[in-house]
Length: 613
Image (cartoon, rainbow, N blue to C red; front, side):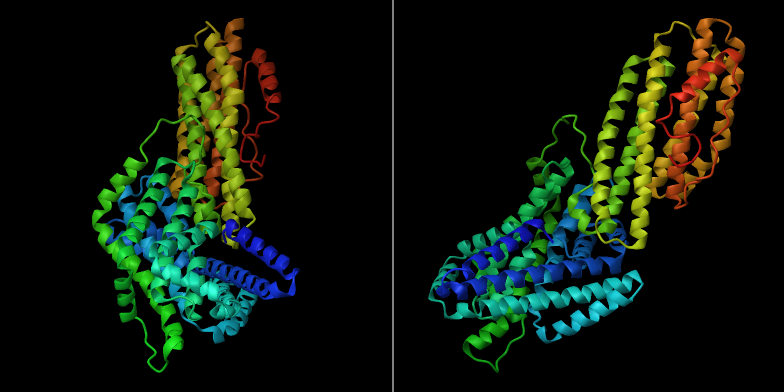
């Protein structure tokens, strides 16, 4: 549930309590305010529980469906509608689309179809609440609670939670309906409704403002349907309010896109353009839309007058909301290229300011832990890319004796540190949600992988870079044989780290196995450092160079050990907690002290091997 909505409900409850404490004549208004606020709170809570339950039942299949079937416009449209109908959040769908566009798995034009479909999927909420099955509310509550409480299967618990949420939503609607019943005899209210009926643009603005305040079009739609069921709102006025709700929900998309990459802002722009253009286009034709909605809605000829209007209006408004989005999507899907071009024009590329920002993490996904974990996996792999880039830059600095490359490595490590903190904060917030056992295990694996990648970048910054600066400042050039051994070791470790990153990002088991299989080769290369360097360590300068090469070799072995833990996590294997650190290579007698000294300075660094730090 949205925090602004909760804040609004708490404020309404406080206002109602204050009114109740005043003179007796205002107690009726206070009770109505409390009933409306309490009913709305219960309705939103129920919709939230329904959404969580459906996502738990669906598992990771919704994300896979989104990735697989968004290849063309029609498939993208249907996929967006299906996924949003299940997860009950167009915001989450949009964020997922942004992640796929950022990762290159989907073009912006393809994402337009998914976003248009997401708007259709959100109309399922109105359809659900328009079915007045209040008599089943208590049965849904009891049955849903029993299944969720007694079942040990996550999917069955999800089904129970969904039923429980649906029962809460219907109870909330019943509370709102009872609270608003006195409005039927209020002349001031009818005067307002008459004004809204005469001025559809004003009704649209009212619906948009209410949705923008609560950041929930479901809440606005629910209230409108309840009011229609009480005979307080005509079909035409209810449609104008629902059109406003479609416009107001754009505020949520815009707020979620602030500070995000350009692709995220462009997706939000498509969302805004679709809803704004559609609402303004239909505004002069509300009567025609109402006629179409009545034509496909059930009639109640056995009733007369206000009773008949109250019985027919909820379904007609819900159907009008669906028709509005379906017709708009069907028309605009043919102009997906134009919408994408308009979004690019509204949100042009701009120079990066150098600040580190997450590309995949989004707070809107926290409500859907399985999707949030997928985003966290991609962001953690991006952190691994940074550690790998820093290691490559440091290796190139040594190979080419290039100080600029070394400074580039240091800057990359600082960026990795900033991103690591963002990932940790995101995982911590996600960990406070109710997670399944599999989700909790995945969160722990991602936390471990993020920690290992961060440790790699710290080793480059704190251990390799200082020694590399001394090497670059030295006039003593290593022997060709020694130089070849050093470069071969660096490339072997870089390749192993790249495999670990690939294994995490793509869930590539083969890449993980390549990383684990590289251990013997890397250990031989580390041992070869002493064998190759020792014979040439005959002068003070040569001994100093020998010591520095050994230090870098040992740090590279530490980095490889960290990458092994990532590879094990990608394979969903426990880290080898009892694996011993590799034996240090034999060094010349005059270099042994330097090696011991270098090792003693590594107290803050992770030990070699896969032992826990």
